[in-house]
Length: 80
Image 1 (cartoon, helix red, strand yellow):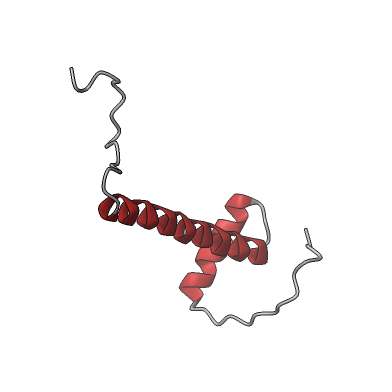
Image 2 (cartoon, rainbow, N blue to C red; image 1 turned 120 degrees about the vertical axis):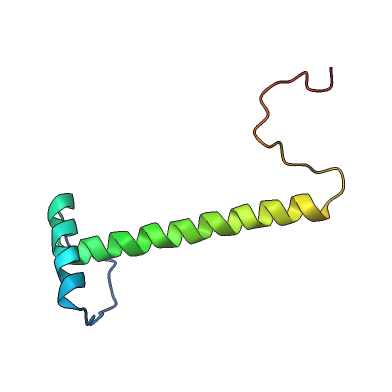
């Protein structure tokens, strides 16, 4: 489906192997090739944003005294 907020055009040159991959992926997702590419870009952008947040959390834990990541501990009586 065409989205009205799309204002930029892109010309993309691909190898036949990459284009075949996009055709197969778009057929599996039942979307157009353009929508498939937009989806890949969105997924990649969200993964980078997630990595930035995790990096900030790790840096905060390293620099702040008294702040410690939990390592996934679920027991509340660790210091028994």
